[in-house]
Amino acid sequence: MKIKALVPVRSGSMRVKNKNIRPFAGSNLLEIKIKQLLTVKELDGIVVNSNSDEMLRIAGKYPVELVKREEKFATNSASPNDCYENMAQNLRGDAVIHVTVTHPLLLPKTISKIIRKFKEGKHDSVVAAFPIKKFLFNEGKPMNYDSEKIPRSQDLPNVMAISFAASIISRDLMLNRRSVVGRHPFFHEITATEAVDIDTPFDFLVAEYLYQKIYG
Image (tube, rainbow, N blue to C red; front, side, top):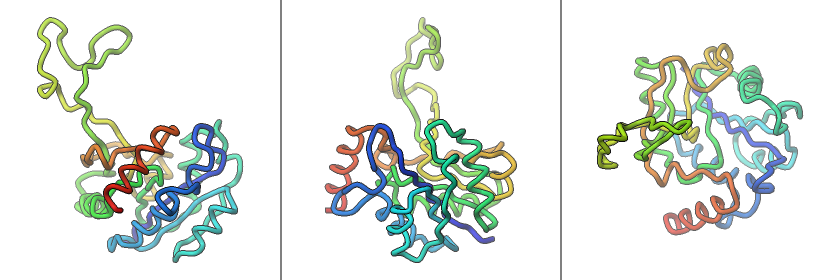
């Protein structure tokens, strides 16, 4: 089984301008992720998919495959399902581990564990996720507890949130479902630190601070 890492990056981030390649802890998110993936021995290759010539130029300094994405699949209005389908069409391999650069604290050893779990063949996909121990409401009604018998927060059920830090699936199923999550996924629990996702300027500062504290 040939497993490729897929690293999607695009220009046009609305909330954090140029977040994929702006200075981050002496480097940038794209290069940090590529360097992390190059240490994962279970991979048979790394594919960087982008609409940005600048991002592809930066990625091209490393031993990775480069795929130029059409602009229509890189806009803020583009459907994620359409984007997943297009990325799968432009990738060769038996399985794909979709990895986002906006999770710089995800450990390479965690990526290895996710791949090994997928190779067991018991699930059609393995997805990085983390438990939410919060009192959740939906449309004014409690979702995960009885409001007349309020439990301790640690006794709440494990509601798992998909982080999309890393998700592995067969290329054929990714193409068929137009998604990186299969019908019968296994949720691989990651730490709160690994789950830090950069979506806002505040997230960027927090992630950079933690990254520098951990890696110097």
